[in-house]
Length: 414
Image (cartoon, rainbow, N blue to C red):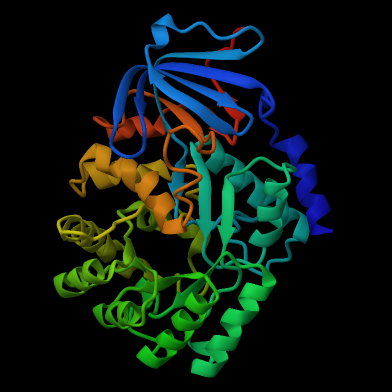
């Protein structure tokens, strides 16, 4: 039933003009950022099917072959489709303008439509790949996108996350195997409380070793929610793949992550400001209370401080993830701008963190994150140069995913 309902959303969220992946397509633009820190001026990209076949300079002299479609994106900058390694597209505001919960009476159809809308907004914002830690609803959405039934970013999901309620080491191992059998792309683990509850450690080293070890043996990555230094250290020592949030990370655990090659995904401010801006829609639900909102206000400068120290830690791979929830979908690039403007990250490095480095953290480095021959044709064009002005990432004018155009504000010509 849910798959049928999700498929119906194609009519609601249909792009203005979807270019099929079978057409030969050429794009030319003033600037091209390849996702690895490289830059071309007067650039052209040729796409056949879902793949890039060439990336070269000299677009002004380029004449497309007969029958191919040309997108003249003069004055814009091309870059790989952006990647958000931590977002929650199933979170939405219900008919009453409140955060959806299982108790509010919304139907599966309403939930499916809301998630499809969030995914489409994210795609139009230039994010062509999205990782969602912790929602069983994501499986149907992921598969519907892969089948071409609805427009959305390439979606990876952990399905239901694991936490202290899952049980001891043996129960955690069984839960990891169960997620694998259910079709999870990776495993999400809560090793600490939320920032609204102080972020204290909730899983022991033995529990984390069991969960992350079992995942590793099954070929699955592990993303660990950890705010406190103690929970971060335990997860890193257990060999988990990636640490999320880390608001209370110390310089010592940041160095430990770098030594062990653990990916770090801190947030700058979008998730906290979104909660505060939409306080009336969250307040009174679970730990969204006076104490929780006060903790999030205090977390903003702490998060920026941790980000600055993480970026200054030699060898630490800092990837881009927003933790976007209800109210933040489609605004993901605001956290990239925050990284540059408040966190002090060089603009080109911020682009790399959301393209090639993010792709590597997902194990998709041979498919996405770079504009190069043989890669998936995930291509975004923005107004301005994001290697010099991160705010340009908010001004998306063109979006292509796997050779299909989902947003175009520059008319094509033959």
